[in-house]
Image (cartoon, rainbow, N blue to C red):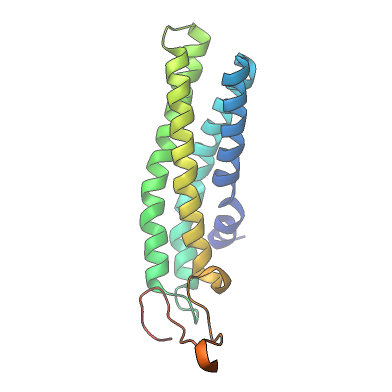
Length: 169
């Protein structure tokens, strides 16, 4: 298994794991159940760690597909640039989750506040990662790109195919 395969296998975990963590944390906060809250915080910490190999294998995955017909260099660039921002936010979520866990264990006065802040940051992180995933999917999945390939337009004329840089393919 090479880095490209590893990237494709692991890439969904930060998105799915974060949304699962959000639901668990929201339930833990709502039910005032510390055990459930701790599970969510550990989930976020694990997703932050798992995001590292996803990010590190991304460059090789991009290089593996950049010369394939129909793949836009601009699509790869957009995905990479947003992924760079997203990994920092995921890292922040991981650290914030560990601080929240510490606050719970030590029964600190700001536990409720930091746990709520963690929930908000996790929602923002999830939103950003869904965008990263969407951009990554558009690299090879023409069916989710905004322009259609060779579909009939008005008056029976075929629509031209444009890649993400706006050039005719």
